[in-house]
Length: 188
Ligand SMILES: Cc1cc2nc3c(=O)[nH]c(=O)nc-3n(C[C@H](O)[C@H](O)[C@H](O)COP(=O)(O)O)c2cc1C
Image (cartoon, rainbow, N blue to C red; front, side, top):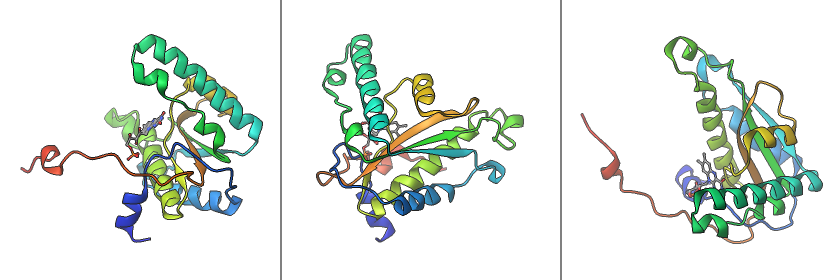
């Protein structure tokens, strides 16, 4: 796909078919993530690939419980209507974790979240690689980070930065509108 087409095709997918995603496709998506920049090229990211349907169902159930609590705590009506069941439809979940010890010179510059920045670049690469293959995904964070890290066996000391369901979209997606660049940009 043309790069500009990939940028447009990448949209957060919240409905998946039951079609599987081949292991080599999952590897290629992770390889795309690993092409991201990182401080000192320390590559602070690591990945957990979940394909066990019971584990995926448990993640979806946890997210629904978090949604219920969030709906209560925030009082936001839309939260109560948000249904994370789509997470349970995806045949693959890829968790991306980051190592806070791998921040390069960030340690001296007060840039203590440089590992999260690098993992975020990694995740964006992965989302674009997914879109390039006509697959769907999204950066999913509706979970209790400590509980989800424990559920997925994220190693002690690593931070869970995102969970990416990956699958065949059940319907075509469309990006919501963006703010005009002119409103966001200052030229000096
Ligand atoms: C850090 C981060 C966390 C997000 N968490 C969630 C989430 O938990 N659930 C969800 O449905 N979307 C989540 N999103 C996706 C955003 O809602 C989405 O990117 C935004 O609405 C723009 O839509 P688009 O991705 O289709 O362009 C998250 C995005 C980012 C960058």
